[in-house]
Image (cartoon, rainbow, N blue to C red; front, side, top):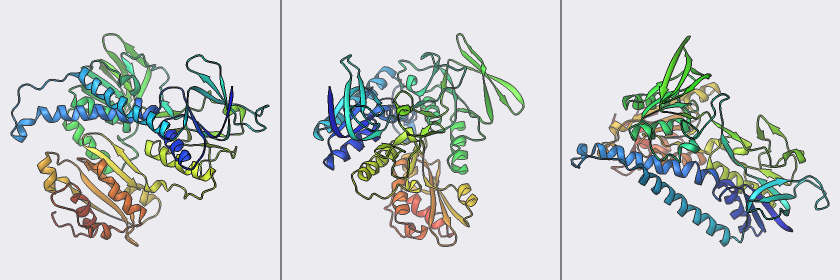
Amino acid sequence: MTKEYDLVIVGAGTGGYVAAIRASQLGLSVAVVEKDKLGGTCLHKGCIPSKALLRSAEVFSTAKRSEDFGVKTSEVTLDFIKVQERKQAIIDQLHKGVQHLMKKGKIDVYDGIGRILGPSIFSPTPGTISVEMSNGDENQMLLPKNVLVATGSRPRLLPGIEPDGKQVLTSEEALGLTELPQSIIIVGGGVIGMEWASMLSDFGVNVTVLEYGDRILPTEDKEISRELTRVLKKRGVTIVTSAKVLSETLEKGDDVTIQVEHKGEKKEFSAQALLISVGRVANVEGIGLENTDIEVKNGVIATNEFYQTKESHIYAIGDVIGGMQLAHVASHEGIIAVEHMTGHKPDPLDYMTVSKCVYTHPEVASIGLTEEEAKEKGFAVKTGKFSFKGIGKALVYGESDGFAKFVVNETNDDLLGVHLIGPHVTDMISEAAIAKVLDAANWEVAHTIHPHPTLSEVLGEAALAVDGKAIHS
């Protein structure tokens, strides 16, 4: 059976299904092919489930110190099965929402594995999509005018440390735990690793983080990394940096044991479980790229600024093209790709205006250049910092660790970067994003009246601090 479409999207994660909706809005006939579930990794194995668990961990941690707020309770206990049930209920609700959006947009959904075919009787150019249906039905042939590849990524593995779903886990297996280990080793101190470290620590798990680099969160500002290290160590998390994991030393018994090289010495660590969190790998295999002229460089699909591949009618977005590998980035890349293929003239995405969020406790959020990056690029830099300890709402909330930091071009006062660590900063970073989009100066943010008492006052104070004018320091 064959069917023609204006656009077929291979992969219905956040980037894929958002692109499908935008294409439908523009009047295109659209199909999406998804081998798992609509919503992809973000909804089912990443963003949403992990944040649901992080929220439960936050509530549990707060409940254990409720007497600090004058609220006396009986012994606080954790029902982890209920935690998992709540997580799944959120996923199911959002999954139904995405299914509704597909029906609303009259977008056809094919459950199966989509592969790009080369030139054939169906089409003189590569692009026909063969769908191996999950239910065992005969393959479907989809004949699109344009193709969008949005196949996402999967956890990167370390040779010699193979996940078994019980003692050795990736983040995807960890999301399905039915009970918590008493202790865990986390290999990797990037975003995902530190979110799990924070979450499991709040759940009462003894956590050790082994990071190859010289600091955790290596893509964030150094001062942010230092502050998160300080806070997590204060909560009992062991963080070992400059640690080269020796995969061949992995031993599994009642506990998992592994050795690292650290400062010229070998050290051994043991725990009930080990979580591998060393980045993600683009899903470029098994989708028919070899039948096209599409280039794969450094493990990701190469595109231009509008996400066209070397095959001009085939586009690619999201984790499969590398870059920032964030759900909101994939969504905007998808919108730009669809608008470009339909003859519109979208502006290329300026990645310096994209906010990054880390849902640790305390949270981390940032946009633009770090202080180190700005100096490396030759900018004359001035900075301003303000601590949440000087913000009344943070004290009321009971979360005063952290600060806001502005990185500013000394020559013209343009914002180069804004970096936050503290309570609810992932909800506050959008103010900085608007400032970046509008090419604002720090003094313009400072002159924006921030209501009192709110956590957002930290932005106004940090903006003032750039010029030594902070009021409450």
